[in-house]
Image 1: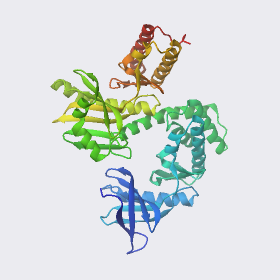
Image 2: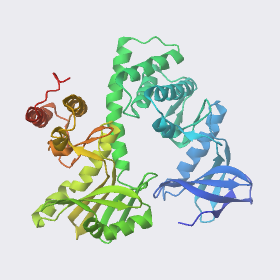
Image 3: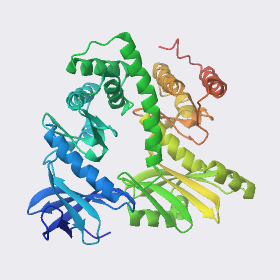
Image 4: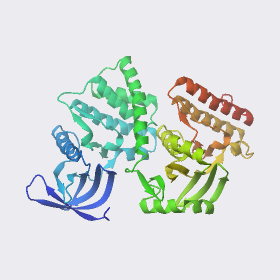
Length: 463
């Protein structure tokens, strides 16, 4: 990839023989083998450049993007104005659109919101814009807060390649399904707020909601949340805006970009065992080796799952490595608003076709594990009881989504300043069958009851 800034020449498809010269200043997004999105300057004007590189579908993707930008403008939807299209010097299709100055991605604003009320107000603003789109016969196939910008009180729609256009208004069921998708795009939103959002949306469309409509909305939320998590977990395994997937030195790795960029990731990979030996060793056993490490000014915990023989490696190659499972479960819990240390990388070391060893890297969380917390004489019993109630609430969330931890014990719950967090997730499972969850979830519940008894506490009676 060229260093920034660099010049990009595009032979315009609007003016025959005219070549436009742009200066690309930053890479905003990349989908390997499909498209790249750049911040750029064109005639001293800030623009966004999308370059489509798919070997088969590039022309179709570019046409869909150009058409979508123009149709959004024609139907009066807040969106970037299409400027021109053409081919780069190496023959790739490109679309150039205006950049909305001083606008921020709605998802980023949502995450920075100080309280749930601010988040709800932001969702209401998006909901109003969504209802406007539906009245104008517009459906977003990839609806999420990352596809909206906010500037002042105005919401702008981006990524028009994922938008469908119809001749008339969108019907009730399809509209409510889209509202449900908006509500469950961030799992931290309470169910009561989701229903309130549904009612607000219906108000914008001048509809009266029946109980059957609310039931339909809730059912759609459950289905769409499952689908959204599945898609997000799939994205977490490949190179994207947030993640970097690399293959080097017989390893397959995925890094969170906030933790490592390419060169840093390769260096971390090559030095990882030495870094663990130099770090604060937390556990060193036959099965796993855990160490606290500083890297790239990040305080992290690295857990290595050791090689234990050919059969062991074969099993974990077929079932996928424990580090990979830990990575996916960590992201799943994060999307479900269940506290766990953020996973920032996983690494699989191969010998031939077999996974020989693997590593999971998570952010370090300052705090005591629950074993020491409950035995700390400097902590009041009322505070311990309050913490146990919060642990119980955390386990209730697992129960709500039919997730079993698999190894629930005091040392696998960290009590941080922000509350309890689950660790050691490689034995976790998500159950489709109720009877299997009852079996596995019952073991977690029994473990938790035993832990309370051992600590002399009871959530129901405490405080």
